[in-house]
Image 1 (cartoon, rainbow, N blue to C red):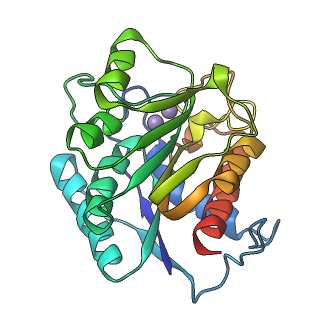
Image 2 (image 1 turned 180 degrees about the horizontal axis):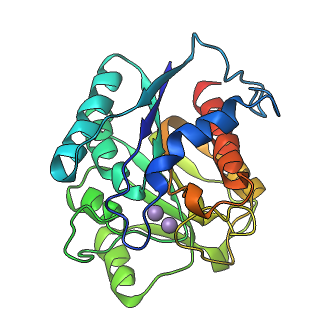
Length: 262
Ligand code: MN
Ligand code: MN
């Protein structure tokens, strides 16, 4: 069973707010009669015995919001539910992984993003959406962190990559036949800005030269490993055009559910 949890938190965004409005819009596109509920591998995402909509969390702010995200995810995992979360900005991944690492001590992360999100300190906000993977790595919560789609490495983040032993597949080295192999459980964190803005314009940080929707689907299905959860973050409805990015989020949600459950 999987719980889909909406996490409407965008206060840790450094540039633009808006992603807090994303979860219900992705779910509307997910259920829209314009398509059906099947993932490409044949999994029926409309199977209510396997996919449960948890709804949107009610959150306060600051550390209290982070703590409640961790608590809710832990509770679901303890009920033997897997979790797919809809952000919100990328700050939500840190408390989610704090919960996951307790249930899955050998956890690995596949992180798909234009940005490495490894800043040691960004504007003095430890929860900044520019820093979740620094927080995860300094607490030693996972075995391996593999990043794909990256095209914004600066000197500081290169040092962080070395410091934490992050495996980075930069966009300029990306090949769509990429086959990733993981021993042990894998969590997939998808920042929608990993996609080229031509495919997904509804984001806060437009970074041209990115992945296609098909590239991301291929990365998910060509991955060899036990996928136990994931998130889709950084969709910003204020910047979208004709709801096309909500639809990309819904498509990736279907394929992620299909990968986890079938
Ligand atoms: Mn990110
Ligand atoms: Mn990003």
